[in-house]
Length: 91
Image (cartoon, rainbow, N blue to C red; front, side, top):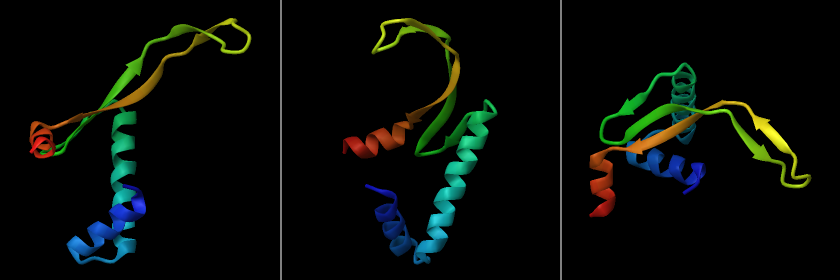
């Protein structure tokens, strides 16, 4: 499902303008990104949690030259679905 489809479905279900739903989705993703960037976990009961994860510094090989490169540490995001969401998908 793409963003446009999600927006249209939510617009119909919530009886709201598609533009309002687009603003809501953007605001939600921006808020989650801001909190995770600060190192905070964002939990949405019944849906799941978004957690920051620091990927360690590592040595990698350049695919073309084969030279070893030092890849710096970086912040990543991990989504963990809630038990309720897992159950809904299972049934």
